Length: 143
Image (tube, helix red, strand yellow):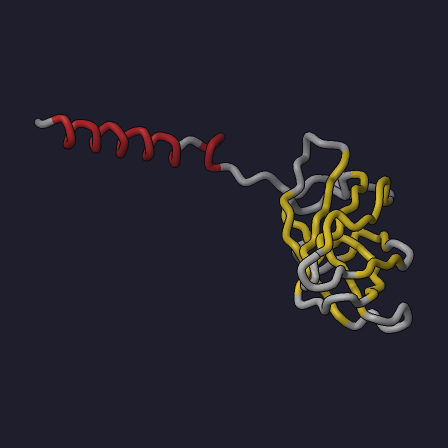
């Protein structure tokens, strides 16, 4: 048997052993949900360009399903946050804190935007915390 075929046979054998191993193939159940989720840092503007911004905040690990979303509700009036930006995140059960970063796109230059942040599980259920309204202004063209 030539080296390529031998290598393929070894890879196939290892792959089937890993897939048949119940410890490797096991899917963990959702982590217990936190009793109380709170924002511990931010939200804050990480960066702003004329047509997009990144909003960042940290909270204690909300638990639940590993797949989560950071959500920013925003608009040009503090009383009308009608637009939404979401970014997926995968929770790390070993960490006590989670950092969310959401890219808010389609913005206009030299415009003030108001926003609030929250997080939710992949099933759409809120983690139970929402920030007060904050604001930022996008820079002008070329800045």
